[in-house]
Structure formats: structure tokens, C-alpha cells
Image 1 (cartoon, rainbow, N blue to C red):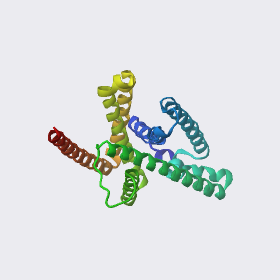
Image 2 (cartoon, helix red, strand yellow):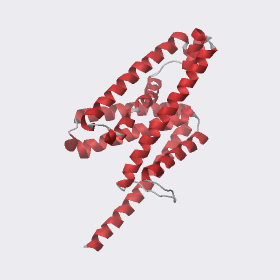
Image 3 (cartoon, rainbow, N blue to C red):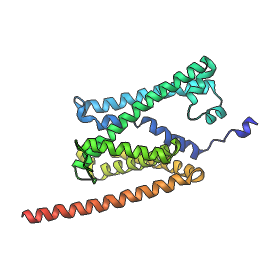
Image 4 (cartoon, rainbow, N blue to C red):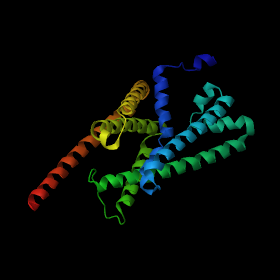
Length: 260
């Protein structure tokens, strides 16, 4: 009975899980988005990224070992949102469960706050470069404070309409596509300027594409609504961004013609 209820492993499922696992390591983008505040960023940003990835590997390996040592596969699947807390129950009782939950809430809150500030900094930079539209809506303060408000509001909207698993699924789809786009842009336009290794870029694009394909296949068979929402949102962003850039480029050329 237990073996019958245990799902069989598959390549697409493994790739889908790998895609979700990537979200655990995306925290290093907080470091890159705060590069201007780091002393000697050309040397220390790379070091900080490698250290953060190494720490994540160690921490998640220990967490995985602790969970797998105390729960069966069926129990892990059943308690997927709080499996670490459930794994603490057999060893230390209900007090350990609440202690683990509180630590997880604090860690999640810290990660969310750091990500919000990192995203708001990136949006403020893109706004100052006139690459994304911006409206003040009569709010005081700097552009970054405005983008911080927009980021929080967007997060609240997602939380109101989607559960945690769907938010994570949307996040990994957008993140992997963005990652592929950035690597492709560096490969085509900035490779020589930044001294990037084309082999590394091509491998990164291929790995992202493979993982994304596996994740999309899993979602297509289990939760197609996520794919529909992701497609609609990405199409809306692409259309709005193209209209904004074309209009902004036309206004800039008119200004230059007028000045001449």
C-alpha cells in the first residue's frame, strides 16, 4: 500500500524539482544588485557569490539529510510545506516543531525583505536608464522608494490570488527565461566588452533550457493554469515594453532633431 502511493521517479520530475531548487540559490542576485555598496566590487562580488552558493549547498544538504533521516518519502510529500518542522517532531517533540516554524518564518521574512530591496534597486536602475516606464502617483521620495512600493504591492497581489507552490512555479519560469535572455544578450552583444567566456555562456543557456523544458512539461501535466498565467503576463510585459521603448526612442530622436 505504501509503495503504491509512492510516486515513481521520472526525468521530467527530476528536472522540475531541479528548477524549483534553483530558487534556493537565487539569493546571490541580492549580492549582485547591491554591488555598488560593496567595497572593491570587481573582486569581492564574485567571491561573495561563491561563498553564498557554498553556504547554501552545505545548509540545504544538512536540511535534506535531517528530513530524509526522520521522514519517509510519503511523509515528506505529505508535509512538503513544513517537512523540516515535521522531521523535528520525532526527535524533540512539539516544542521543536514550533521552534523550527518560528526560525523558518524569520528566515523567510529576511529573505523576502532582502529580495524586495534588491528588486527595487534593479527597477530603479532600469527606470533611470529609461528602459522601463515609471509613474510617481504623487508619492514623495526617490525612485527606489517608489519601485519598493510597486514590488510590495505586486507581491501582495500574487499572494492574494495564488498559493505558495504556484507563486514559486511562476517565479522559476520567469527567472529561467530571464536568465537565458541575459546570457544570450551577453553572448551576442557584451562578450568582448566584459571578457565573458562564450563556452560558459552557451553551457548555461543549454542547462537553463533543459531544466525549463522539464519544469514546463511537469506543469503542463499537473497545473496548466500556471503556464497560461505565465504566458499572458510575459506577453503583456513584452508588448508594453516594446511600446514604451519605441515611443521613448521616437521622443528622444525628436528631441535630438529639435536641438539640432
